[in-house]
Image (cartoon, rainbow, N blue to C red; front, side, top):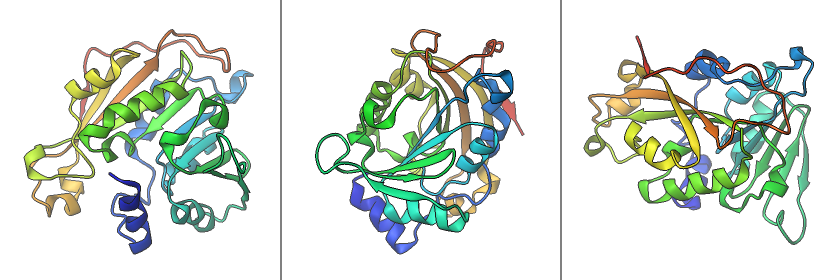
Length: 253
């Protein structure tokens, strides 16, 4: 989708994609990533949340002991996040020229937001991250933009970075999106070159999504995956022992 589409959604309050509660997949599967926690005597791992909106999932990640960096296009969403959660933040305009020309950085203890175009983000501007939480980013892109998104994300991550990826699957002919249906086959096509992929679970969520049922959906599943970028090392952050990989997604009811 073009940037103006999302600006219009936030300006007109058409944000049915926003959830007021912490995502169930995040709470269930974040522990399946092998991140080091502060209790282990190691540096807390920075977590990137692309296309974060005003998601309260970022608060959950901070409560779990991680520093968090969200990236969001809309200034309305960025400022609403801090105002609605009562968090004082300092806003900095990053550079009159160069890599940071089109970004603002909202800073608060353990939780920063970069307001700007995700495709203009650079590793130098973002800084090192050890993990990514993607619940709403991949599925927000139409099919012709998803490969570009994954390529940009991969450029931002060092080998060993992990990701919790949540997608949705439904009959594509029943709805045009967003959110867009992304099958397990497409996940493998997009990520297999640079990541190891472990399916974690499949959840039938049709009964919980009246808004999408009203659009004509007769089948709707959420899929969760653990991805690891490249070689399994992490110079910037410690690791815990890897958990046993799963042969296929767990079916949740």
